[in-house]
Length: 232
Ligand SMILES: Nc1ncnc2c1ncn2[C@@H]1O[C@H](COP(=O)(O)OP(=O)(O)O)[C@@H](O)[C@H]1O
Ligand SMILES: [Mg+2]
Image (cartoon, rainbow, N blue to C red):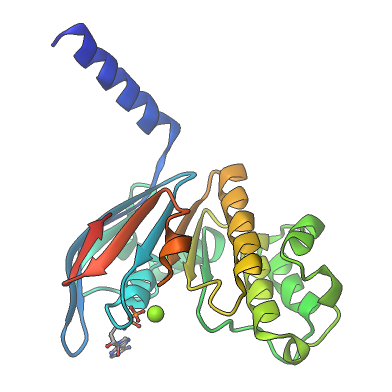
């Protein structure tokens, strides 16, 4: 090995050392009535944002549900902080999901009988983290916090569900089309909020979207196509 090889290797190990591996998906395959994807392998590091794109029906939401452990694939392994999640006891898995994974669904699952502020308080209670007033300002929902969920626009509900997830300070945010109901400008603000959250908290973001412009803002972009996940 010559000196320049050594330099490359040192640089590589520094890079790996500074960005801890959080989640590894290994050889994930899944099907419903037909095969959705085969042998998907994906690594997610601290401070990293990755986007998964693909046309409707290719299995993006299904893959996200698998990556966040809500759905068990037909085959494959999911390793979080060096532990195989499928080997964990139900209680340990619930703890990882509750404390470390923040999931933003396409449907928001807000509690409709409560106002916006009460919906956020629930995240505070469950995680014993204090809500951040700047977060509400960044997401431009600070002025609607006393309104009922039903009185909020679709976009405001979407941002409230994002605030609720960020308030619990997850290690990985899994987001399924989180800006689907938003105009371009608001979508950009929301993405900025999520990117600064992962940077400031050594967290990571897995974003599912059909919008290539949004995807390109992430560190890595993958496309689900022909039953495979291809890095672009
Ligand atoms: N729980 C389920 N049972 C049966 N089929 C499903 C289920 N969830 C998704 N599918 C099917 O899998 C395919 C991929 O769905 P989905 O993951 O939602 O794709 P995307 O998010 O890329 O639009 C679709 O054909 C959908 O009907
Ligand atoms: Mg989907």
